[in-house]
Image 1 (cartoon, rainbow, N blue to C red):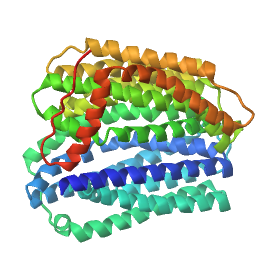
Image 2 (cartoon, helix red, strand yellow):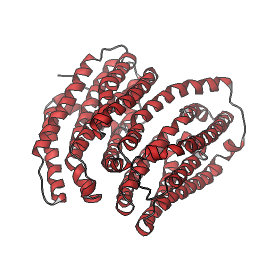
Image 3 (cartoon, one colour):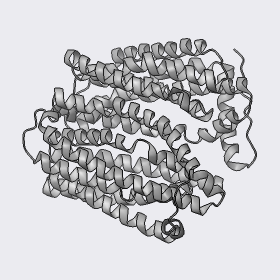
Image 4 (cartoon, helix red, strand yellow):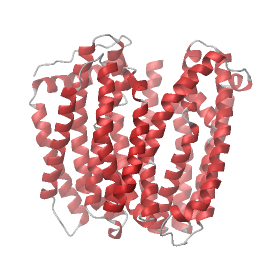
Length: 517
C-alpha cells in the first residue's frame, strides 16, 4: 500500500506540476500583453518580498511535520493531536507576524519599485497580495496534517483545482478587463477555494485529531526546536540567494527591467523544476543504498549519478540558451528581449546549481544535512553583499554573477566536503572537486561553441528550431564521449532496471555499480 501511495503521490505531483507550469506560462504571457511589462515586474517584486517574509515561519512547520511521522506510524493519536494544535498556534502567530511585516513594508514600496509609472495603485495591489498570503496560513496546518498521513496527492489535487480555477478567472480578467487589481483579487478567491476544500477533507477524515486537545510533552518540544534550528538556517540561505535578487534589481535598476528579466527566468525555472523530477523516483533507491554500511558502493553510485546529472543538464541548459531569446520574442514580444548576456549568464548560473542535485540527494540520504546548516546562511549573506556591489558595475548580469561566484567558492566546496566527511565516513573529496570543475569547464566550452554556431533567421520560429537542433548536436559530443565509457553505459542500464525493481518488489534493493576505469 505504501509503495502504491508513493507512486500515486509522485505521479499526481508530476502531472499537475507540468500542467500548471504550462498554465502559468500562458498566464504570464497574457499579463505582459494585456496589462503590461511593468505589472509583470511588480508581481515578481511582490512574490520576492513575501518569500523573504516567509522567514517568519522559521522552519517550525517543517520540523513539526517531521515529528508527526513516528507517532502516526505508532498510532499515537493523542501525540499527533498535540503536534497539530501546536502547529495551528504557530501558523496563526506567523500569519499575524507576516501581516504586520507587510504593513511595515508598505511605505517602502515606492523605493523598492523604482520607475513605477502609477498605472495602477501600488498600495492597493500590495495589500490584496498580503491578504492572499496571510489567508494561506490559516489552513496550512490542515494541509500539513494531511501530508503527514502520506496523502500528499490529496493536497496536490486540492491546490491544483484551486489554482486552475484561479488562473482561469485571471485569464478572463486579463483578456476582458485588463486589470492588475482584479488579477490579484482572483488570487484571493483561489486561496479561499483551497481553504474550503482543505477544511472539508480534513474535517471528514481527521476530525478526532483536530477536535482532541492535548499539550505537547517536553521531549517532543526539544526535538522540534533542534530540527527547527537546522531547517531555519537552510531557509534563510535559500531566501537570501533566491528572493533578494529580484528585490535588488527592482529597487536599484527598475521594475521594467525586472519584468523583462523575469520572463527569461520563468522559462528557466519552469524547465529546472521539471528536470529535478528526474531525481524524485531515485530518492528511495539512494535511501536503500545509504542505509547500509557499504561506503564504497555508495561512492560508486554517487559518481555515476553525478555523470547522469551532467548528461541531463548539458542537453537542457544548452537548449535553453539556444531558444530563450526566441521564446521570449514569440510569446512576450520582441520589445521585451534582452541582451544575449542575460540568457548566457542565467544558463551558466542554473547549470552550476543543477549540478549540485546529486550532492544534495546523497547528503540528505546519508543524514549529513545537519552538518552544513551554517553554509546557507553565510552563502546567503555573502550573495546579498556581492549582488549589491556588482549590480552597480554590471547591472542585472552582476546580480546573477554574484550567485555564480558564491556557488563556486562556497556551496560547491562545502556541500561535497560535508557529504564525504559525514556521509562517506571521512573520505577525501579532492577527486570530486577536480571532476566537478572540469565538467563545468566542459559545459562552458560547449556553450561558447554553441554561441558561435547559432544562426540568425528572419522567422523567429524557424530560428528557434534550427538553434535547438544545433544545441542538441553540441551536447551530444561530450555525452557520446561518456557513453563510450563501458562502466557508465552499464551502470545507466542498471540504474533504470533497479529503479523499476524498487517499485515492483518489497525487498531491499542492492545496486551493483561497476567501478572500472
